[in-house]
Image 1 (cartoon, rainbow, N blue to C red):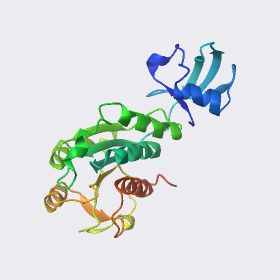
Image 2 (cartoon, one colour):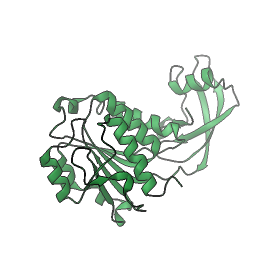
Image 3 (cartoon, rainbow, N blue to C red):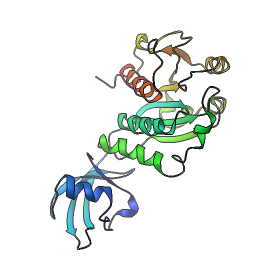
Image 4 (tube, rainbow, N blue to C red):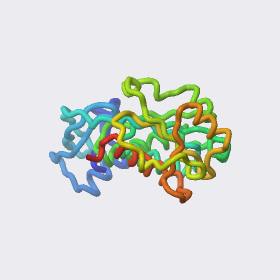
Length: 248
């Protein structure tokens, strides 16, 4: 853990002995009473924490001194065709780590319908993955996460038209290595928000390609190989960061 994050309601309360943050502080970092560590409030400021007391039952009490804003989220929105649940956990973590603004899970024609019933979304696993990515990046914010039943629902909703980044016309890119119109890597730099649509591993249907084109998306490839969903998500996000000038 590069930063220890707390929910607002946890402030002023003991951290239980079996809490992974307690274990990390005491067993991994070998912190003792009076030691400080990087800390933050989820959705709030970051700064330092201090172990004030290690209780007999193994729980700890910490104080927080927070006065630093987290790094800004990048104006990148990633829509992903539902993959296997284990892949969802991986790319949620990694996209959160990279700092994208929002992630949308979308039902697709070629995707396995049963994947949409994953308990990852209702049981807290998705949020845990997002938080894990933020912790690695020393961030206190996580991407917005939304679910859409079909690609057509997502395109009709146009969630990229809401919020601060909507004031600038976004670059709309649908990853497609079957019938691409060009290569994503060859696109000229565009210092504006980017919306990425990543299909399932079986790819987009012809119907969905038509829908994406009608919505203004350019179908671009990242090479001839069929990538794992989590690999495609991360590669596309990094290419988008390069186009936005975020890697300079």
